[in-house]
Image (cartoon, rainbow, N blue to C red; front, top):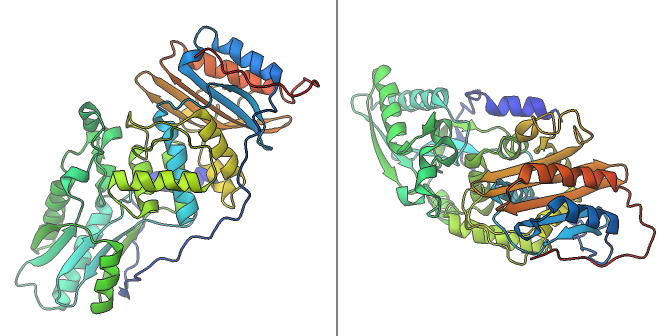
Length: 436
């Protein structure tokens, strides 16, 4: 798979027009394939004493603010400092939400935005949070609404359009800091989001913007539209209504496929996309309910989830908590997954791509580390897969309060490379917990 091409497609301003012909709405999507891979088991007694000592030296006087875990593909915990202490992960949280979405929905899944006509001639606009839906897509929906209205002989009056959108109270997780909500990275999470609800900064009222632009486009084409907002239907309500009514899709816009959405979330750390993917995987747009579903999925994978608290899908919430052991084990688990190549391809690459493009360029780490960065005030994290002479190393580092996090991260990655394979031939050493 050419991930650079996928990312280019994903970041394009608009996607090509979707399905133009009429079709009956499918009521239920097929379930994702079950995963039958063995679950990871951490072997905490088989550490690499040389690496453990090096990590302790790298942390210097700051071990109490760090959690660091290094695993190999056998589940051996080669190095660990405070790996069972849950900390704020920042955008390393996206590794959880994207793994969940990929497992549940598959690499070819696409988000859909649909204009639907009901038997009484009225129309509905439904969406699933496509981050690429743009002005050109909105224009195509307006044209489809006018054409169908004309075919029903109702052009003398306005087209009646119901826009199904989340209520305002659901647009932001309640624990996102108010100051973050004005920036593009803190844009509201809605089902119908033109340009990911960001134009320079965040769009504070995306529903009103969509309504205004839709009306403007209809008027430009000589028509009129009457728009009202309604709450989205649950899957049970959609199924029940489908049994009673024959609804027709007038026009559909689809997102880039899942594997490209994953790249946007992980490589470029796009918060909106990560939030939508978690909600879509859970089929729950209430962030609290979707977060609980994500926690259940993590537990079902057999991962060490002590202290895990999922508060959102992007990591912008400071109520998220996760241990470095949990993330390292998740990376190992996903490397065993049937969709492992897609998950790996979604990550930034040291010295080459995404949020790691300017880090470790020209060093031995360049091109060898695929991972996810995380940064909010006082928090610096990085987790990923480092390719070594002795195979992959699953590395997770989370700091909450370090004075020199970037320096420490680089030192630890170099230590992992240096002590691979572990030079010690002595009996396995027990882990040390660090200081605090």
